[in-house]
Image (cartoon, rainbow, N blue to C red):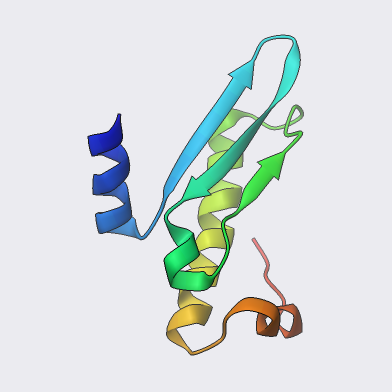
Length: 85
């Protein structure tokens, strides 16, 4: 598992980890964005979404955060930008 996480961070800039529990709403979060953009992404309470949809949402947000960080926009400055997925 750790090798997969490391490879995803090297290849994509982050890894998405999903926590699922049959009786409770699951959640997902990124690993590896902190150094690049100053924050991680957490998607909590996604009970109404399929796992692939949650992955698409997180990948979209993380991709935009990485793009903005490459443009020199980080941290609280992101509040001035609209992130859409």
